[in-house]
Image (tube, rainbow, N blue to C red; front, side):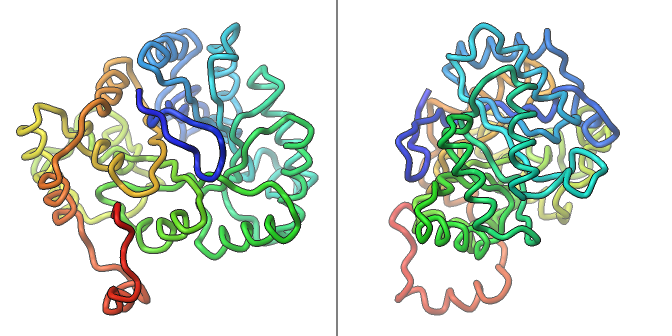
Length: 343
């Protein structure tokens, strides 16, 4: 298993991590994703560890805390073998302080996650979303205190806008506080908005990219093709609710290109889509999800080989879309703003 440096930190992580959005199945939203119990989770973790994947991603909001509990139980007795990422910010109750990034909420949220996970430290702690009502320095000081107390080892943010990330990084530098070393965001062959601002920012500031939903909210599994809607799986169960809006014809065109490359490489559509992401600048890790052990094994097969430059170019062309302003305008000044050599 290949490992990469987690942004501007000393931590190395495997290029794949297992997401736990399918653990628990509590509530209408997460019930569409899956209902993995402790026994099945333990078997999935066995497979991951056997393939060198010791990184597991979860969040307090996943199935109202049940995902963290299941992950913690499945890791019982082997916590020392694993890296755990979890998140806080979204609502975990009905009270006015049961959400957000205030010192009050974050300290309580972190303690609750530690208890559910059955551990005394979290390897990577994400702010799941940006809280504009809480001063940035209050959030960062609370996270810094939790880090200095040994309850958190590294910090990350997720789903922030570019200016929000930059404001946080500038505040950390000015105040001498621990900084975000990782950004977790949506990025896929059918969702390349991340490249317009967040990718250049992450490369410039040394923030590693951890990708969630690398298969386009389940649309790049190979089950969705022109004229053939899926009859099983998350999308068929209504699991596309809450996902990014996308034109079906665009998806079909990208899948056509993936089909062609998959035939050339003797890989699956999903494996090709994941491998393409692993060749993007700044990408450190892909969070892969699986409802079954078969799906997990297929996704684990996305590493250990590489697409050719010509195949990458074809996939780039099939998935390219005109960006919004000011990014389309900035392309006219490329000679003074060259892309990174790894772009």
